[in-house]
Amino acid sequence: MMRKRLTRSARKRRTIRPLTLRRVYEVCALALKKGWLTDGDLSRIMNIKVRRAREILLELVRMNLLSTQDGKFHVNENTKKIVCLFNQDDREGIHSYLLDHYSFYRDLIYVLEQHIDDERGLSIHEILTEGRNLGLNLNRTAVEVLVDWCERLGIVQRHLYSGRIYIVRKGKPSSEVFRDCLLASYDKFVQKEDIVYVAIPKLREDVCERLKISREVFDELLKELYLKNVGKIELCGAPIVTSAKEIPFKMKILSSVQVDKTVASPGLKIADRIYYYLAIFDYEITV
Image 1 (cartoon, rainbow, N blue to C red):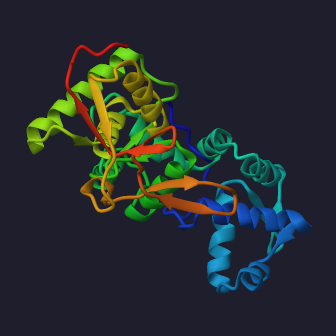
Image 2 (cartoon, one colour):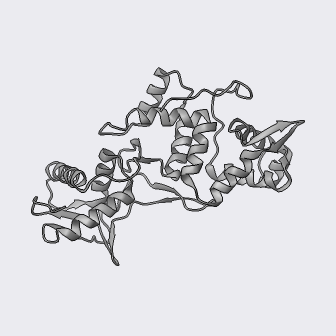
Image 3 (cartoon, rainbow, N blue to C red):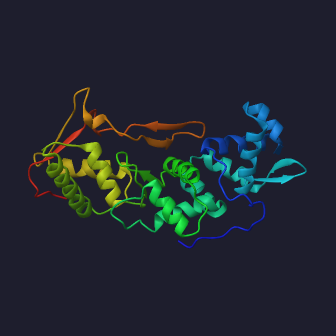
């Protein structure tokens, strides 16, 4: 993807003013009610300091979501557009808007896209190093804020054990590609941990990172594979206390425009049961 450069107008600051996606929505929705806001208005409504209110408003100006004139921050055609995208839960639309209008977001995506064919994702440190080498304005705060946005939009995933970050491909791989990757990942854990039953959350994170697929796609493909190979593949549950449920990082989702959530990586749900471990007893897997 070719990176675009924004004009210098209203963009003298070279670092991000951190805020959440939820806050972007809330402030734009507030501004739409009367057509404009001041930093004093926002300070009173959200019970925050005037300085912080101004930081938020200026960052929305940089995203082309507000326009500033006569000390006020006015709505524009993009303000209503972004609020509609949030209300419709159009995550791809929000992603596309940010790519077009927010240079920090675009730079992060650019760095990650260069590694979409790598077997592993990138650590925060690796993203920062590559950003510096490319002359991009990505500091640690910017990367951590934007990765949070991208996770909630489903554009990237963070490996829940290593913390590595990668772009999620659209669609899903063939059943053959998924099977081969699952077998390779299963073998790796069997040899490394000297076990037969491998924790499904660990398999999921490893396979998703290698294939750059979403966790939902992994679960869908694993269910299909299991149902075609009952007896060759065995699934089992877990006791209340088990290491399979211990995960260093949490998944982040944008469950609604008002609420940002983090959820633990679950086991595999089939019908009314949740399975946490998988064993393969016959490698002649039908696809």
